[in-house]
Amino acid sequence: MKIELRDVKPSSEYTLLLVFNNGETRKPDMKPFLELELHRELKDEKIFNTFNKSFDTIQRKNEADFEPDILYEKSTPYINK
Image (cartoon, rainbow, N blue to C red; front, side, top):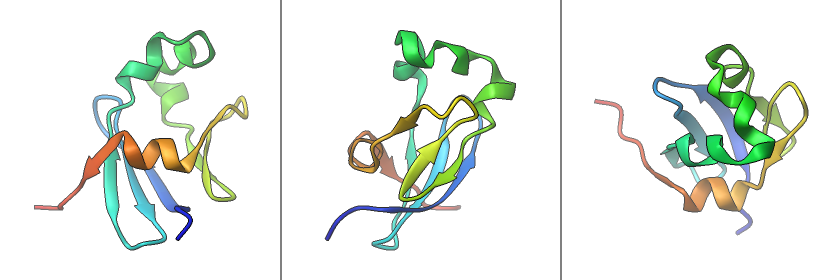
């Protein structure tokens, strides 16, 4: 099955809550991406919080996006306690 994103919510400390088409909710730590030139502006939390769902992945205001497979692989399962 192709991994597709169904929902995204910015969370604390540069993490996101992602819901995928397989029913899993996962939480990637986005801090490692903040050092890459393309994503450096995400250090500003106002910009980080502009993530939204775009087709089957996430996108931010400047239209830079992430591959859903990468988001899935770089995240851990999230269990709401």
